[in-house]
Image (tube, rainbow, N blue to C red; front, side, top):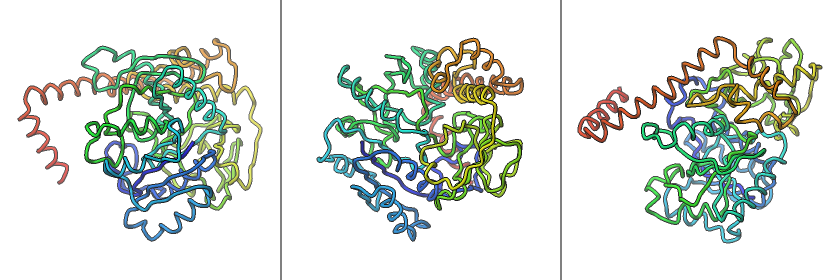
Length: 439
């Protein structure tokens, strides 16, 4: 597998209003450091080659040489770095020829700079690649693997059924489930979203018809996907968006923004696992506690009641492990670890409110998620599901279901009707909205 990166590194957000729960003025980490952190996470994967098209905003240009040295240190074998971003059809078609690769070569393809690989091992990724290769050969189809935005794509399994054949739900992408097993579900959903694992043959198919590609091609999201493509959704999360998913209504209390551990780049991370009192300058991991839901500097992370991340010890990301200088390990009862592990998996699986799951639905429809580490009985799952949300969270979830599913669908349908029935009114409204946003 090869890594193919095409990015523009800037602290200016393309759609800052989409992430309303993030501070618009105060960010803990610069995009430059987030990109380096993301690259470090990819360095644990076994690549045959790596290709980087990197454009830097003016404030980061003085650090280009240091960045390139950092990349060559992470990926010492067969790496190519270009000092620009691909943004035209002609550039793309030339860049993806890759004559040294076979059509069946797998590519971790990304135009994103902030989706770290967070799995604790490479076994699941390698297994999925093997399964996707077999499926592609058996079904004579192009298969892509969706490695990130896990809470969103997992909830899409229910959303596909909810919106199927309903014109007023066209705001949401529809699809059918072709296969469902312990490792993934396979769907007819297709897109060219700019972070996927796909073959060279499929990547070339995206660009095979210039009529599917608009002039502005900084990212591939705008390409009309080919009909031959199908998508594999893993039941295990591979990567996560650094800024989390508040744009989809996912609360930060369940999936908070990520952080770069203190001492990460110096390979001096200090880990505290368990314990009731936080040790200063240590990353506080505790399966029993809720997580800090805001962006917060290490100096401000002082709460004993909130941890930095509530994963179990074995799920510490693989790319952290050779950067850890010290671990303080406190005993936690195994039954407590088990129940909180399942509880957090339920909460994350139910986090997207766009026609998403309730806990009782999730343990039935998404059962493979909860059997990856333990072997709970269904009765145990039911018991944990009942306590996954408190009363306040149940009320808020029902409100988010209404807001992000039904209310948003009504709004979309109304605006679509105005756009098609009264185009002059639509254009006037867009003009007024543009004027207001510039004030």
